[in-house]
Image: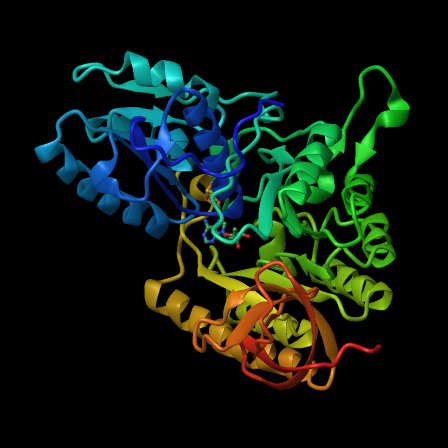
Length: 456
Ligand code: 5AD
Ligand code: SF4
């Protein structure tokens, strides 16, 4: 591993880079890899755009509104050039990969998710009339040897990418086109990265992949070293019992009993699974090419709860996919009521150019109806979140302190193992400490807790 500092270099004598990150947690971690590469090339990080000679946006294409927001930001970045024509503006990530040359009308640098090692060379080659672009996708790149420079603020929780790309073909989704084919990273580099974080005071790592359950490392020389996701989880969990391990995202078609049992075996593997369902209608799931149906999903939830009764389960839901009938929509609502998800990310379907759905299935649910269905889903989830939180009242939970609560500086906030946000009175602990608390009341977003005296 290259030995760059784990925290950003802020040195005003170096050229300054400013980075904005949009989209998923994977993008946050990619920005950390990018910063590591740029620091090695002589740059230092600034949070003040007016000081930056290099302005980067690491972008997301998942829905049209994500891209529209970024177009707006690009226009704002360009204002910097009015007074400082030497400023370089670069677009990284999924939107770079999707739009390619189209972005060159507005920016100087376009770099797709697999081209970040090339950034120093591209930056050197940029001239006013010679913008640079690299949107090649790779079958091998995992940035395994690059130690990300950590951009989190509190030094408690960090992301580790365990794989890149995606081999699923969900018909609505642009990710396989923007991030390329799936590839897994050498497990030893993952464990080493987690150990480095632990040595630097981090208490929680989140293993990231588009579909972590299909993580698989094939050792070319010795097949007994082949590693699946359950085995990787165990390797990371064994680093230290006080290092919490989380992971995201699981795919309902691939999450294995072995993963569920491994979670149950280790206290420090957090009891939370993000399991996007997308729809409760088997007809929609088939058209979405999710490769499971409603019954399969409900069986996986039953299995998780039978092995890990307190497991937090969260989800993603899409409202108004092509051809969605009122009955399909009702199926989504009834599934949500049946499962009682702890929380959910909920979206209106946004057709993405180039996807299978954009070629085969018309985006035929009118805007008003999509919005209405989305609102019904959001309203129901509010009730379900409250219901699931209400069930926590009276329970004792171990919370990893993130810092002062936003509303009241005399209180602390942090997450329980099941990923629920807790607030409770401070007794002087700091970020990274563990506290035992008891839930006394709840809202749909938070558990309000009291302190539990430690048993002597
Ligand atoms: N429109 C709306 N939501 C989408 N997602 C992915 N693609 C689309 C799309 N075209 C949602 C899915 C996925 C989450 C990351 O984003 O719910 O799980
Ligand atoms: Fe992440 Fe998908 Fe957005 Fe790319 S398109 S940044 S993979 S959420």
